[in-house]
Amino acid sequence: MDPKAESMNDLGGRLMTDYPDVPGLLAHERPREPVYCIYPEVYRRAAQDFVSGFPGRVLYAVKANNYPAIVRLLHAGGVQHFDCASVPEVALVAEHCPGATCYFMVPTRLRGAAREAFERYGVRHFMIDHASGIDILAAEVDLRQVVVFTRVAVHHAAAMMDLSTKFGAPPEQVAGMMTALAARGAEPALAFNVGSPVMRTEAYTYGMSVAAGVLAELPFQVNLVDIGGGFPYAYPGISAPPLRDYFHAVKQATLALPLAPDAVIMAEPGRALAAPGLSAVVEVLLRRDDRLYLNDGMYGIFWELRFRDHDGYPFRAFRDGVPLQGETLPFRLFGPTCDSTDVLPITFLLPADIAPGDYIEFGSIGAYSLSGRTAFNGYFSERIIQLSDVNAQPPGC
Ligand SMILES: Cc1ncc(COP(=O)(O)O)c(C=O)c1O
Image (cartoon, rainbow, N blue to C red; front, side, top):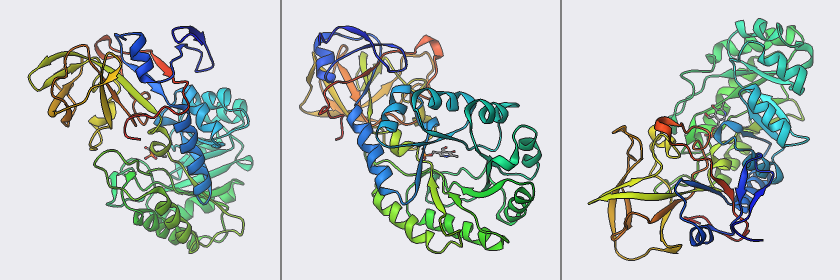
């Protein structure tokens, strides 16, 4: 195929340009706007590894990256279940992942959203975290036809972001809510989320022990326990245990839960599936000593660095499509907007002679980047391409 040929493909209906890899892209053109590159095999493998390793049902948390082509790749890699937080997320999965199941896993929804999800998209799993949520849900769906998760608040110090400050009921209130749901005809289930990302496996063991306490209070057994997301990704400088250690910890902790015989443990990984297969190719616009000004920044693809403290992304620099090597220096990286907070919170060791017109490719950038970026100051690139060489490797691999 002519690498410059514009082709309509099924990547969310946008015009795409097909290149085998990033050197191929940069050898053919000097993109003015950031280009986001999908490595399809990396996504497929991430999905396969998670689904085959996790001791239960895997729901991809769509919020982490809702780009249609990426959701499709994860589906193709074996993810059959999706954690959605809005009707547009449900609609996206319904359109792009035939046969998949959506779960509406957030305790607050727009008025009418549960009804639309239930009636139009056949969603049968919902969530509450307060007793008043039962009537709100019952006004829109037939409780006798749905599974309702009650989310219990769990916090553990190993989580970088505490997700219990907003959602989740105190453990002592949860058995009462689940019993009330059962009395109304719903199938009760239990959920928790220990945070995001979770840097040590014992956080899940702790979450399971809180769940065990709630389950022990119930006059019935449940079929589903959802342990949320939080599985970490090994960004540079991050020393999290491998995923298999998390899976093992979950498996062990499950043995102590008083569950129905065929009960299923569910997980909602976002970052672990979304991060690995996307890179951002950005241009250096200006150099001032150790400062580089880029065509993307904190309001764009680096959005997540505002909230989460990780050491950035693996990267490599290019000049005329060829990797730039040699002695390195620490640089501060600024985005293109007028805002002085538009600067990456960490320095990057880049080739000492890097100059305007060179490009930097940042890998492992798929989580909470495309789904969170803004068009502040008019900077918003639509260039998302899928690389065609299945052996192409992003930086850091
Ligand atoms: C309810 C819920 N599930 C899943 C996730 C995904 O978390 P992660 O990307 O850390 O796996 C989040 C993240 O905020 C969440 O709030």
